[in-house]
Length: 161
Image (cartoon, rainbow, N blue to C red; front, side, top):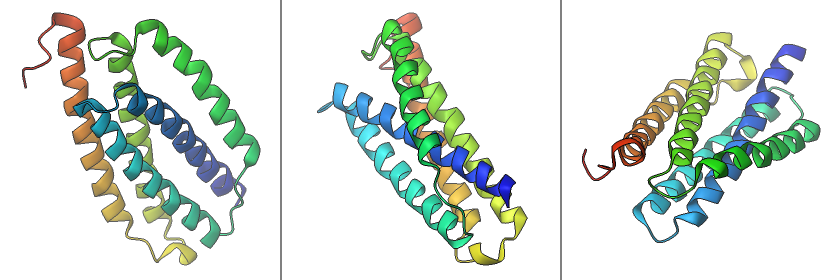
């Protein structure tokens, strides 16, 4: 159970860090299409975080406040690097943020898959296959924005698909 505790708390910490970063970008680009993307992504990741918390409770895993605080602090430090690269639509900072977001969502997808494979008796209320598909959709939508951001950052043609 100790391994499951550590694994789930690591993923919860990752979601906390992701939500902090996404909230920043949503605010920076408020009223723009990019801001709307971040608001929608934030809502979906918050829903997934709530699901993870429910799974944790159902299998008897307590949330680690220390890991949550560490994730919050790590996001602030990581954001400083991203801000050095810029936070406007044509910046490297946006490309790096979206790449990091895709990595985090991929990790979440792998977590849902691992939980499905573990066949935990108290976690049978969740459709882990559907949660994996949801993560795939999040990756797909984020990749569209990442490609747009990369074009703007690297060759100035971000309006092309």
